[in-house]
Amino acid sequence: MGILDIILIVVAALLLLIGIIGCIIPGLPGTPLCWGALLAGHFCAACSISWTLIAVTAAVCIAVEIIDSVIPAYFTKISGGTRAGSIGSIVGALVGVFTGQIVLIFVGPFFGALAGELIHDRTNAGRACKSACFSFLGFMTGTGLRLITAGIFAVLYVRSFF
Image (cartoon, rainbow, N blue to C red; front, side, top):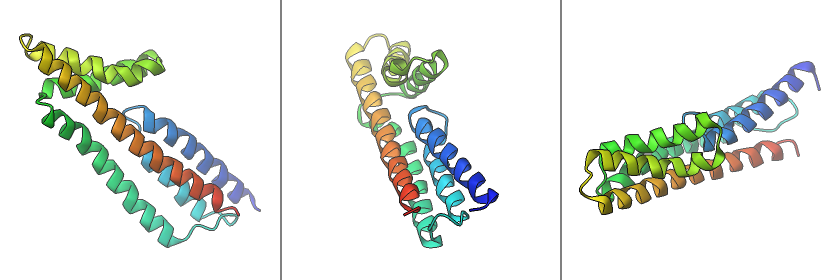
């Protein structure tokens, strides 16, 4: 194993680590980073990752990113939420990220959506709460989908050594 292989293994490992973290933290492209680890592994002599696997996982990665973008809007729409709730959800998640509080990363979207909906319409607290619940559900569904995909990519990468 040469120095280039060692560099590619380290780069791939870092991409996997940052990618898995990125699946939880909004704004980081977690799934594409994990796919990048597979791509780096393809060029490593110690790994056995084919172009077919790269192509299939790229398609899966793109599909997951599209679905992750659509899920929150869909959940907001079916709950009767507004754009203000969607924006509040994003702001709530970012507050969790920037304060470094793991719990806030998960509950921030709920409270952000609730605040956004109440700012938009203070007279309908029931609708605001329903929208916040669905926003949280959409965030968790997208996060779960991304984490599962990243986990599968990580397993594929590790298995490529054996």
